Image (cartoon, rainbow, N blue to C red; front, side, top):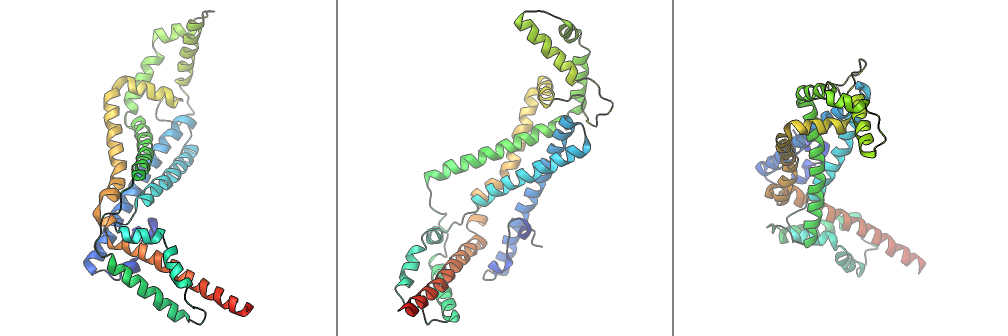
Length: 307
């Protein structure tokens, strides 16, 4: 089953020139990548649901926020992965960038009387010769800008991973968090501070904060949330105060989990040097050349008519 066609647009006809074992292997690794991306999207949706329940205290709004967050971050992750899907055949990559050198050659030839079949034959011959010249992958050329681009993509993925991690932490440690909130609400220090009325600037700020904490943690019988707090910021502060180091460890685990697909594509030779990306690049070259030849033929025909 080719799951990759639904996310990455994997087309099996591009693998028709590969042997059966290699073709199945290419389909398999893109299926694995698709499943991983869908699993990460599910985690993002659950985190968005948690955030929605805490902020809006309502299931319908929370579900809407979960879907929106999942859709946005899914596309960001997909964009990061697509930008990393680069063939390990530098000769093909260079040819895609510099098609003008090929176009210049055919501008010097008379194409006005050539049939579609002849143009197709020219394209196929060019593609075949180019394929033979690039049978062995060389890993692609390195450029310093790759470091900058990879850093940006890794940074984006890490931010998404930590957002998801913190959202799921609120749900996983909800009992511990509710216990901490109960202690804060029943704290005589917080209650006394909230009842103070003073003109001193610092003391007044402390009183306002104490009243805000009690307001955010006040019980609400109509709330659908699983924690007794209406503020994400306060919930994170109380959660970190009870288990700071353990939360950082979970953040690291989520960052590693979200970076696995990125690293698979960046370092995995089965992606970079695989037959599929090679055929995709060759197909792009064929399409570009065919479009140019048809356009150039029509242009030459028009020029002859004007003469």
